[in-house]
Length: 269
Image (cartoon, rainbow, N blue to C red; front, top):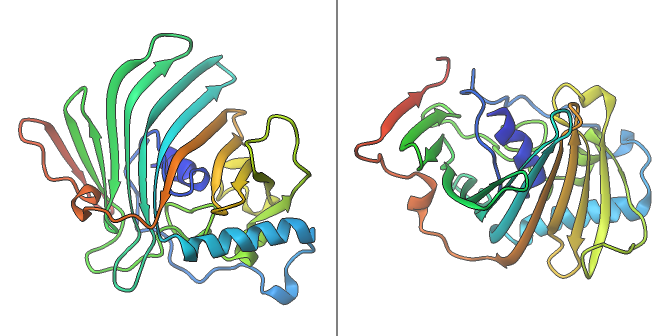
């Protein structure tokens, strides 16, 4: 779960490497401790503008689909894992909870060959489902109690915080944002944003900093690079991004696979 939550921070709600363990308790739903606008730290106006645009993008694009490349470089052991797949993300709308579906079809370890290794993650607002097709294993993790409404993607509140659609002031409360002019190697027609985790939130946020390249047309991230406290580096690249698409809701809660190993991890277990 920790690896998934950390990746969701990066991947505009879209990508994962898999839960390390089941949730120990229900996600925190206490009121945010973020400063109000009057007491928020001073921020470069250009960086603040990018955060405000990301906030607006969350309102403008409640449903997103994209192809994704996800790479983790584990510096201490010199290992690298790369996965390719597709993501679907739906923000909460009215009585509909926030949901996502992630499927990876291809894996490469280090510089080895690409191999078929299908892994899926689906969240329906209450349950996170993990499907490991190669070993035919399905695990359900309960994230919210029956009937409980959680703000699953809210930074500082939910289990799957997003880097867009957040309130700009909440982001400023948790991170030190900065920007720079375009540079060689940047994706075409993007703006650069860097978020450094503030020391007072270091225990709650897994990465120390994240770089984001934001598409100027959609105001959505198309590349993200993060570093965590173990010095691991995660790179996420989105292509073929589509906004405001319609989803079959069944993808967010896959049915039980007959003949598979099956586990259910409820809250408190």
